[in-house]
Image (cartoon, rainbow, N blue to C red; front, side, top):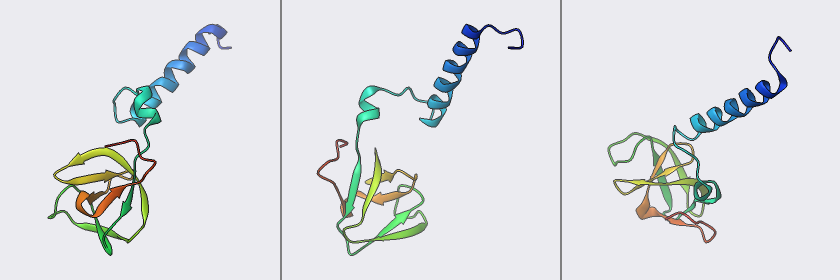
Length: 103
């Protein structure tokens, strides 16, 4: 195939996949602990403001009703937890679900 041995194509493919996984994980190495971690929150407030950044002064981009469940990230900053879609919610008004392994 175009003068490239099959073994070379396999090596290039594996390196390409590893590069895509590295970029998809924000430039950090993926560890087995990260891959197995489950992080979900449940809303405990009547209506929860979802913000564009970790702070009270950040714009509200949406709201969530009580008992709504959402995927989250382990990242907490200024009392706000990052959701999986890079939006933020106050940790005062959410609780980790029973199956969450993040802190």
